[in-house]
Image (cartoon, rainbow, N blue to C red; front, side, top):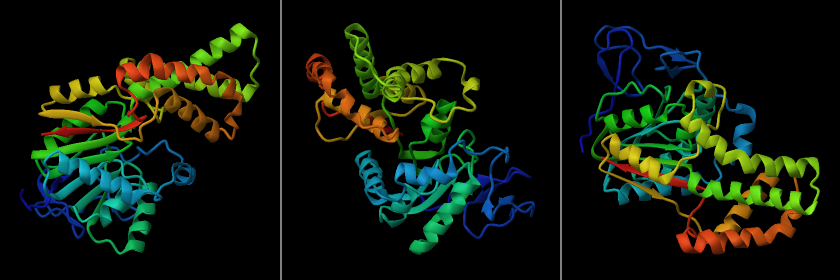
Length: 338
């Protein structure tokens, strides 16, 4: 694949300019490129920003704790998709660097352009990258809805937990297809509806059994069960409903494996797979574990769920084993080959 640096479009004259760290103005019209806090700003609307809480996000999501393992997963998936060399990689939704920090240290990724809509997140990432002495990462402020780069400029386009934040992710995927070189691939790690739906079903069954038996949950216990019971239906409703109404909703979607595969093929990708790596675990135990995780987020001991363990076991015997779902995890990786 070509070593030519990816290019972006000058906002002033629409000519193409190489994306290199030292770029300060357009070689054609000499207009200076807009910068925010010193970061190249390619957002069409510079008032747009993330809805995520900058102060709490890193701690809540363990940013940096598994960066090397995550980056190694993306490298392995891209190599498995036939991308022998990732000379130029575009990362969408870099945030404060949960994936980026690992990419920078993974030899497979030679040159990385990491983007995000939030100047606050990228400023934090700059500090983290400077601590590592990394020189193979460039940064730019970019809206994931509008990717202003030259077609065919990247060997790979990747993003970790980003598409479900983008209201019209289909348009983003279409742009990713356009930006990827023939023989390249796009990989996105996202929440999987096919697994989350069973956690919702388990919570619904527990609530129904409690109602029928007269079992009483306290306010916080009922809050957790009600939230999980309705979550997958809400996410699916967001998918088929009014996308404009989701402007202030951060976590918008969970993705069906079959639906994403159909979308990818309709956009021109030659092959779409979902690799859902996770330790072998009975489906019911997986759903129960997801309920426990929500309890942990709510600072609630999950022991109140123990009397209902039989429902988790029933999920495994009724759905998990017959449908071969024991190796499915709630977070998976969609691989789009071009």
